Image (cartoon, rainbow, N blue to C red):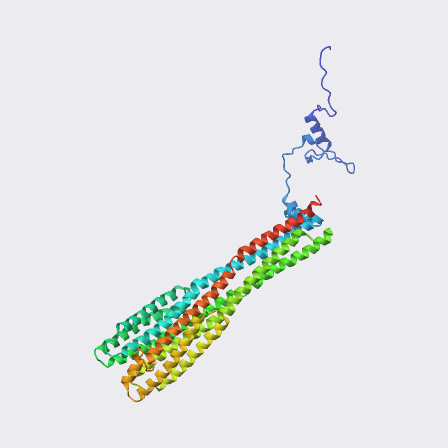
Amino acid sequence: MTGATDPPERAPGGTTPGPTGTLLHYRRTRLRTPGNGSTRASAGTVDDDGADVPEDTRDHWLDDVTSDEEHRRRGAMARIMDTFAVPYLWFRRIFSFLATTPGKLVAISVILSTAILAAGWSMSQSSSDRQQELDVLLTTTEPMSYAAHNLYTSLSLADTIATTGFVQAGVESAGTRARYNAAIDRAMMSATESAAGIAFTDRETLQLIADIERQIPIYTGLVETARTNNRLGNPVGVAYMAEASSLMREQILPDAATLFSTTSSAVREQQNQLTRPQWVPLSGLFAAVLFLVGAQWLLFRMTRRRLNRGFLAATALMTLAIVWVSASNFSTWQAGTRGFAEASMPWDSLTASRIQAQQARTSETLALVRRQSVADTSESFGTTTDAINLALDDFEQAEGHTPLASGANRAQIIEARTALADWEGAHARFVVAMNTGNYAEAVRLATTTTLVPGSPPTAAAAYDRLDGALSRLIADARSSMRAFINDGLAATQLVSTAVLLLSILAVLAVWIGVRPRLQEYL
């Protein structure tokens, strides 16, 4: 029939060609599975894995589902490989790059940079910490020790002044009373200053200071009671004064001596520790230089060029850092260990001898108060003079090796020796006066501080001169110790910043030196 359209051609099997028909065709053909000539007749067991389905007709949006049984069948090694597959791939790429010459150059540069920065940072931090600790020693630990020294000497001086004033006829002079009050006030303030510099965890030392502060009012109360009874003419005042002096010499002063010894030892230990050479950080700097030398040799083996300017500059910078740190360490050791030790020796011996002199003076006066034999006093006096002479010898020896200063100190030493000789002569006359019962002469020798022209000096005048000379020598020894601590602190200035800066410049020099070699492979 003309004009009529032909019906569409039917594909074999009765399906109409097209996307849907084609899909059905492929699904039906997969029902026949070759193998032994058999055909899967059951339509219910259709394999729809889509392997033979055209690409444009697959269901890509569907995810493959793995059964639990298949997941269990996978071994642990497979799961580990799946987990670390990406890192393993990166490591393989990195090691493949490092096997090349550019990779070796980069690896050498990275290792050198790490070694140089680690050594420089370690030395910088060590120098910074040392500088801070030396500053703490100068501003906290040493002043605490000096406060303990003032506490010790002030208490001994107060006992000497109180005993001497008690012997004076009538009411003691205003000057003597003012000196006694000043000594007690200085002792109380020194105890507070000592406690302020002690760590809260040091319970033993804090308890020691608390015991001293608790006993000082008891001592002053006994002294005031003795003075009151002495003014009233009651003989019991002698017993109160003897009890007060016994409390001071047997309980308070030993505690103060222990505190002074503890704080002085702390200063010496910190000074010795902070002035030792910095061996560990220095070894890091030396190792960095050795790495630079080894890297220069490796670079020569790889590039056949003898010297690399960047590596040479880095080596020079690190060598400069070593020289700088070594000079600083030597200066700190020279000032802090040798100088401080030589200066601290007379400090300790002069302090101990001054305390002994004050106690000998107190014993001398108490013998007069009690009207007792001075045999024991003479023995202790001889021991005291030996200790003073030994302390003056220590000071002269230290002065020969350290700048304990000047002709002023020599004049003080001469003054101390002269006063000690005068005191020995006056004490001998005092003993004779006591043994012969000439108490008036004994009182004059023990209490009179004015010098009469043409007559030998009294024990009181000689002792005052000796105590003043020893006090000035102790102050000079302390100034010398602080000067050595300051020298050690000054030697550490700028070391931290300089070493860190030199290390950074050395790292930059390494990369600048290796850059031309890397560019040859680009």
